[in-house]
Image 1: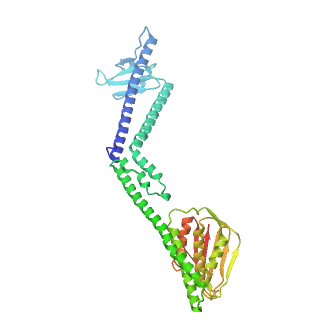
Image 2: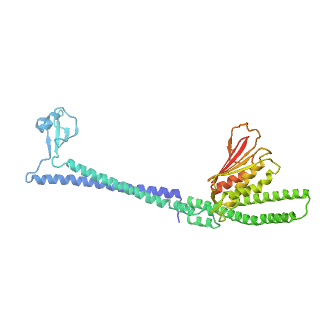
Image 3: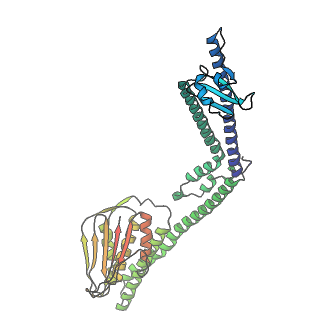
Length: 410
């Protein structure tokens, strides 16, 4: 396992990379110096060999200006200071040194004709240097990548492990896949241990949630079913008018409770139940919602206008869609007062509109607002918003003091 922390491993990797590159550049400069030295000596020897048997006098000393080569006399008469000078056009290098007479200077002339490299060779050497620098740079870049990759390998391994975990379908054993014991006691190991514990808690929560929804689905629906059955038996009994009204209220409350239970169970389930890819028609669900909630219009002089401009099909969760439509219809029926109609339901290819009036004054105008919360319109719209988010639908509530309009898009 890793004996050093991530910080130390990165520092060591960086130091190793710098050390290797420094050695490479040092050997390169040493080789360049030796190669240049050998090249100069070789050029001198070749020049001497070409002049054989008379050996050339490349370096000469001149005590007087008049004895200098003609090309240098005019320059020497300007009494130049002590130092080294180069004359490229004449291929001469001149050193001005103190002479025997303190008022005069001596001159040492080095004739590099035939020794100094030609301009074409200079370009070749420049090309060699560029290639060498590029090679060393590429070597350093590749070495840096390899070294740093080795240094941060645990981080990449942990990221890959976490990436392979499907958070949408988290199982009870997924936290074991992190395996924090594989990452040592450094910073990566601490991070892996934290992720492992977090996933363990989430897995335990998912297990409890599934157990609760499975149990609640049975334990809550069973008494509702028993109540509905008892109400159906009571309907066949001889009841007074007062008893019939009480029975209707119990039936409506039971249906409301059943709808509420289905809504909360639908939201509580993290995993789908095989119905998210089902194709279903919108119109039957709208008609069923109107039938179920029509009792809310009893005693109200309110018409319900349905404009079916299309007969769309939706791919998704039919129960969730039915819950959404029931809530929209229920809110429209419940918040429409006597004579404040009509309630308009428009079905389009990709949208469903439900509009109801909340003011009896048709000339009254107010600034409309768009809200997505359930404040002021019942708890159901908050659940509608969450169901739409879960199923990829779009829900919008447009309200002012004259009317309320809801739009469901899919």
